[in-house]
Image 1 (cartoon, one colour):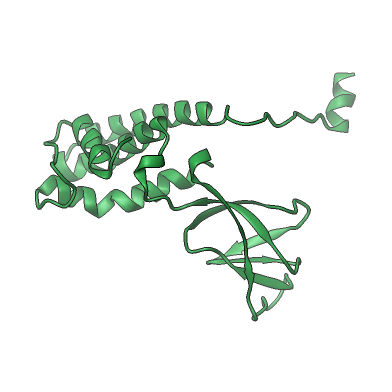
Image 2 (cartoon, helix red, strand yellow):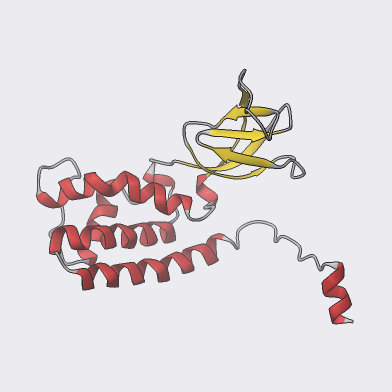
Length: 186
């Protein structure tokens, strides 16, 4: 299980920078890691519905209502990075700011949560996250755009692998063929 410092050291190693003893130290590398760590973590979490970062919640309806378009508005949880879906899949909704707007009087969502506890991260996510962090740190530490671009390519490869493996956990979603596709197949 990787710690925040382990993830930073993996990223720093990828770009040939000095590693750190702790993210709280006052070295240039640790300071640069602290500056970008949370933002890059949230970006990497938000880009895919990682199994370890999914949460469900019933939302609290607000006393205010949207000016037009929808009947109700709900406050999103503080740790919500991205709403994936509603428990009632027939309800249309829109996210505006930190609110969910819809015409249903009650709403339960499935969402990607901000997850600061590194101990629950999937190992392949850690690799992708470290590569993304490396791409951000590369120019800040080495002033090399080439190194930053190389780290971004590593991130893309690791992200694709991590997503492919993560998506294999759980019951497969059945493939549904539309009437139009059936008519084309014959």
